[in-house]
Amino acid sequence: MSRMRRVLEKSFLVMMVVGSLTTWGTPASAYVVDVLISIPVASSEGDALENAVRAAVNDVLDHAIAFVPTVVGVLDARVVGNHIYILLLFADDDGAAIMKRLTDAGADEL
Image 1 (tube, rainbow, N blue to C red):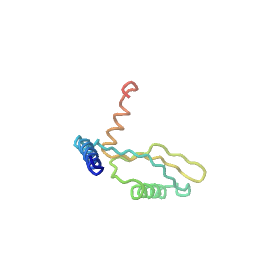
Image 2 (spheres, rainbow, N blue to C red; image 1 turned 90 degrees about the horizontal axis):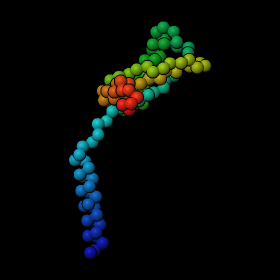
Image 3 (tube, helix red, strand yellow; image 1 turned 180 degrees about the vertical axis):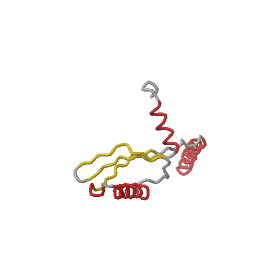
Image 4 (cartoon, rainbow, N blue to C red; image 1 turned 90 degrees about the vertical axis):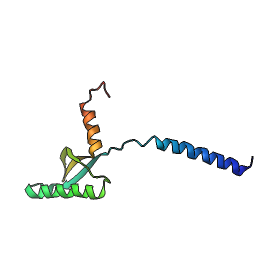
């Protein structure tokens, strides 16, 4: 058997295995992301605070995540030194469903 024939047979076998794996479908993807943003304490009053948080969230949406979230939540907020740190949760529909299942599940179900 020639070397070229063996290479072709192995290539064909690999293509068949990969092809059969892709016919089973792909797993559903769910996106859940925690993002820490910070804003200066100087902008922590009234409309200035709201505008600073809105600008920071929009910056994350524009530059840090590559999906359109359907859920945006605040997980924690703290003042440290001269900054306000806010931990945000972003999730798509599937990610939100998974988060709900995890929070609703008892410890024995996990």
